[in-house]
Length: 193
Image (cartoon, rainbow, N blue to C red; front, side):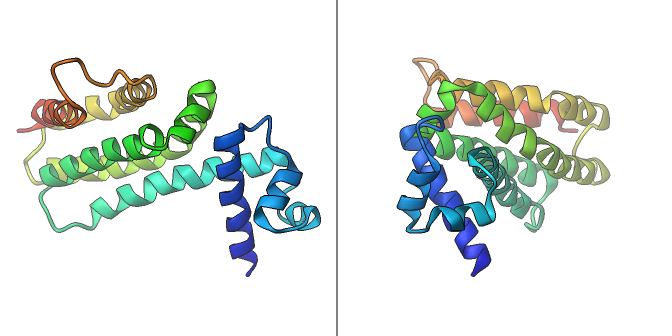
């Protein structure tokens, strides 16, 4: 019951932050929208900043948990890497582009996007390293290129995330899926044996 109440408060706060903005959302708004009293909210969170941090952590964990599922697939490292990258692209698309209220919230302040990215990035890199290490062991990937990819990966993703936020991820001759496929092929061809 405790976990359900906390999760409900986080979800209600996420929705309110997305629709009203963080600055315009009060603890009373969260209490009213969640059908809980202010006292209940303060049992779980000291202040609005703490609720906001929980929203950021939850969004970050959502991103990483889906990526972890790729590791257990019974497919080759090349296919895992492709799945990992496709999933990563689709998640930013779903999280920011398709949820206009979230996009508005994040585009106001890139620091919010950076917080989610930083929380997820270490875990994302661990997943990527596992896939790349398996590919090197299987003779499918070039080790020095994998090392380079790991060092550049966060910069690549930040550029992609920002492009989606600014709605300029594609040029006039391609659509999102074509652009994603081109980027994925470019990455894989750059490290493939």
